[in-house]
Length: 292
Ligand SMILES: [Zn+2]
Ligand SMILES: [Zn+2]
Image (cartoon, rainbow, N blue to C red):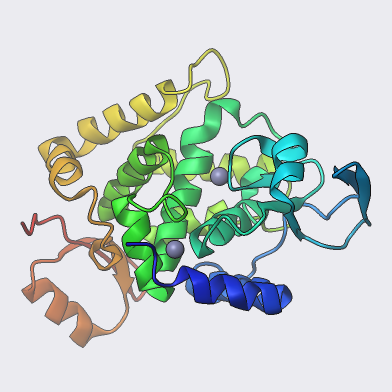
């Protein structure tokens, strides 16, 4: 069965695309990071649609629906949508996509990885985190599409198997590491690329995941393999078992989190959560019990 959400959503998008884009941005702000900014502004460019030039001005039209044929030839082959790092625009192939696609590309456009950097070797970080955060927003806001995304069984709401595996690794990682710790660094924050990137890498290192020479001499999977190995070394069987048995759950209620309220803390501890560390009046807790 197709995603029950899609037809109504696409109709809403046809009627008022700007309202939908604004809605997604405000959801990202309220659920993930309140100071969301686009990584770069849009540049002027012209694209041929059936031989007819279609021009876009600088600083306008962040989201562009292209005729499927124009998309195929001018943008990115057979993908459903893509974020173009040169022009700062999100291109969509006709209406062959769902809200998961729109969220994924919007996240790219506001992430630290939008800056013009060689992301070839960083797919695991860039696409894996983007995909996981897409799942998080779907989980919170769009349950019908979330189910399709999670099971990867609907051709317009799903994603490649690589992405699924990367998201599973990040999801398992966040069973041990407070979501907010890394997530706030994923978003573009008007700092220099070097500064944000260094903070991002240092934050991972603070959790024992030290990457040496992250950019060079590695194939598509080596960064992922290194990450997986380090996680398995750090958290031993706990990580492997959670990844194997619950990696595909994407139940974001199980991710490590911070609590301030004492009553809430006592309740969660009685349910099997454990204290990871305390920070001011915040307590960071994790729950790595396997529930199946
Ligand atoms: Zn992507
Ligand atoms: Zn969907």
